[in-house]
Length: 304
Image (tube, rainbow, N blue to C red; front, top):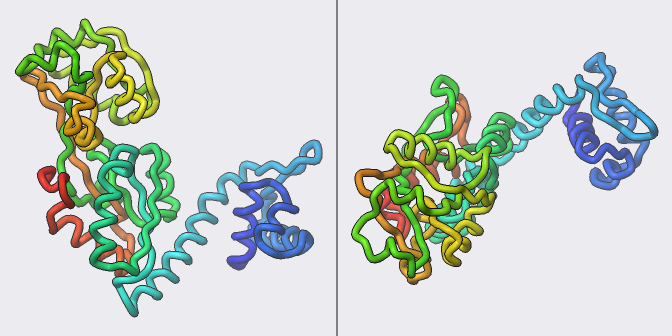
């Protein structure tokens, strides 16, 4: 078994076409077929079936795909680690972040780090919590920046606290709530509430905290995009509770208003997560040490 065989398997598992696999790998179709056949002989199993002239992964192929990804990604990480040993201020840092963190916090962090180390390259994956964990398991990202409300095994993963995130009630700037110092929890039941549908880690967090605070919601409008929720509130479709970092610019510009809820607050932690046994590349280790020890950039400094 060699890396070329595993890479051919992974490409074929994705596109399910020998012709396309050969094109992507810059080799001939017989070469692809030979690599797959030799891999199947080595593993003593069948990885692909042909049904009605179309290729399909077998159950064994599905199971081996995750292991193949780990092997290829681990080798890539090793190459990157060795390359960075000569210059830890260069290289590529590949990590993942959940939606609101990746969109609103991470770009400012990357910009701050690029000022210090212009040769550093960053690759950012923004995805659902479940997908991010899958990518971390497959070693396709070195670490994650996610909410501390995502349940992870502390025996397998190492956590570093990064900052705190406050969620705030937002309304249109001409909403009656804006003229008040605070809103009673019971008043939210009279408003249409814009919120993400299931599955959503933020929705789950909000629902649990509102239940604890005795807040009952009125009719819900489910919108899967945070940006669309913000636009909906701006146009008077209802109210919502979102991360303050996601609406800081709109509140400062008068496009949205943030209103306190009497006796209730919604705050969660943001943390860095990676495998306990993960050997971080020199550039990544330096980046994470600076990230947790120095002030966050600009308007995010207060989140510490």
